[in-house]
Image (cartoon, rainbow, N blue to C red; front, side, top):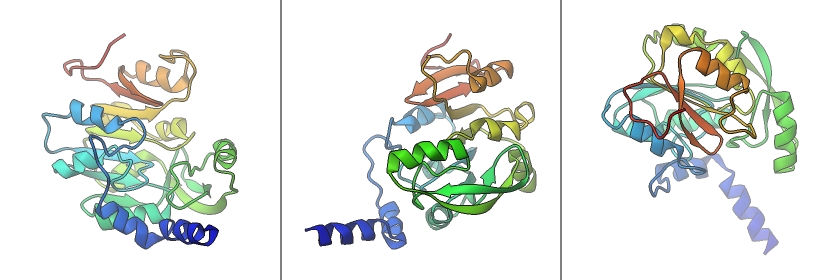
Length: 240
């Protein structure tokens, strides 16, 4: 029995399995597997059939994605992940997007990426967060050097002038991503970012204060994912 379990585990960790899995993603109401965050994204953009997104820390192309339902509607965008396998899968299943195997932060340099599994949603470039992941998955990471760019540089290189939706899911490196982004220039209509704070709303949290300072309001929360918008006209789940 243990032999067959090992074979099954090896098959499920293989690249061909991931390709097939993403051809036939499980979907009930939501592609996002944890809290259904994409339901709010769909709700927010329900009247917008064409748009542009930036997905930093995109992971898989369909399963667990906050932008796949937008892609199905006709949207496109730029997706970034530190996992080579994740980007290869995105190139296969979402070839209308620009898919980049890089890190995004507040400096342009080579950084260490901590890869636990190639499709692990908790891979990170944040050393402190990698210790938390190591305890969670009971596995030491493989460390690779990977190029890091500022988000502003990525946008400039790809001639991006307008962002409708920005998603940031980078396992402890969110502040660094925002540090390399000119939010006043691009003014995304909706931004989602993970905030791990015991207080809700996390009014003293650095990321929360960043958005409030830049004219964004908190419009919804799904699990650890906080949604911010600068559009007063949109119907929101709640307001403060």
